[in-house]
Length: 154
Image 1 (tube, rainbow, N blue to C red):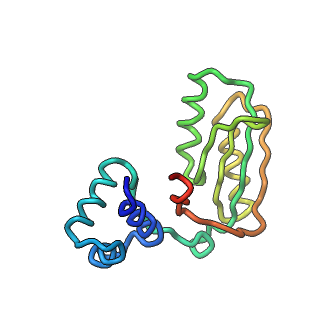
Image 2: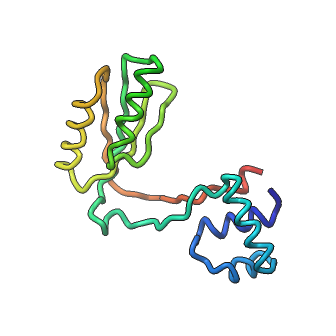
Image 3: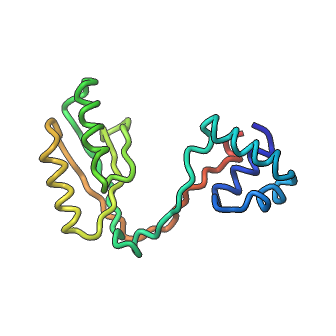
């Protein structure tokens, strides 16, 4: 991946709807070589998808909850079932297996506390072996980005 690719990825992270002509101009290429680079970046998995980022509050999902989970189960079969189950919940935006004090962390979006309570009951009702669940409600979103800091990966 060269400087052109980095520039293309940086621009596409800001606005994936940019016209190819404008993208090519911004990185000092003609349209065909620029398109070929974008296609190659997609084919090689650097670009996983192009999406529209929605405003959670405007669509009625303004409450973010960070859920930390401890379990007494650590065998691979349990993990696979747990991962499948939790991944099916639409409210779960992010799901991580962690090191440290907590085994798993989720970022959940819901409309309000009552909706979170319904999610919580589904979670504990569909999963055995959970020892502790801690929920932290975001009071204010101070920074949010989906753009990776590409300059740090060089």
